Image (tube, rainbow, N blue to C red; front, side, top):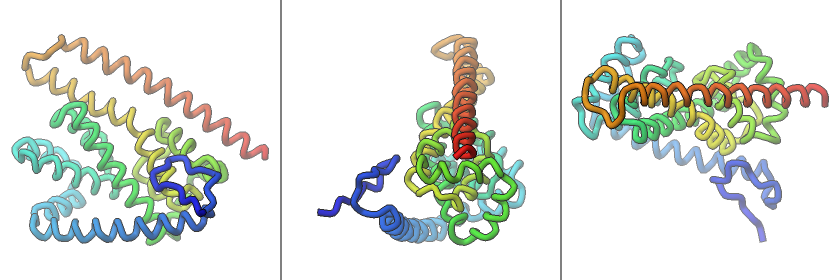
Amino acid sequence: EIKIPTLFNPIGTADAELSSNEFDAATQNVLQYLFAFLGLVLVGFVTTHPEFLTSAERLIGDPANFLAETVTQIQDMGPSGVAYFGFIYTIAEILAIPAIPLTASAGYLFGVRDGTLIVLLSASIAASISFFIGRTLLRSYVEGILGEYPKLQKLDRAISSQGFKIMLLVRVAPIFPFALSNYLYGVTSVKFWPYFWGTMLGFAPGTFAYVYSGVVGKILTSGDDAAQPWYVYAGGLALFSGFLKIGGDIASDIIDNIEDEENAS
């Protein structure tokens, strides 16, 4: 009886009887069909909603002004604003356009829970697309850029055996630029699912902090009555940011230790 590991196992079981190469090939085939299907859906959607394509062109041409205008537009779009925001966020990450202001605006527009979920989903989709572009279409070009990040090169050996753990740590402690690193990880030895789940889970704390900052900003500027005084929200943000900084420092130390172990081996 052949045991096939589940695609949604973030760590990857070592006792599966299907070889890692076969599993990686099977995973890649599934994902190729999935992204092909999503591509057709996207083409159909853009065809029936040409304003999305126009928005993408404006985002590429003048990202700073466009992102500022987007927040105002989404407020008047109703439910379709969620899809529009997710689309713009995904494109911004793929193009390596700084998306921190957009992340904070998600809290302003959608609140903590919905804003965090929308950003996490959009960022994870963008990270997946960039990963496969780096692994396939732009592999030679990305391999050249990888030479500028010797720390990531040193971690590559550890990534092959501790993919999920390493990805989780480097996302909690963002020692590499998020959007650019998505392409760089495509040419490392990390498998897709450890990369995906490590990215999503490791990106969550920072995402929550930025989204929550947008909520605090809305409370401070709107003048509306809030459930708590403004300083309670500001204090909560400061406290969470402090914990996030401590967590990032701990993750950085663990990464340094792993790097030292790899150098010594």
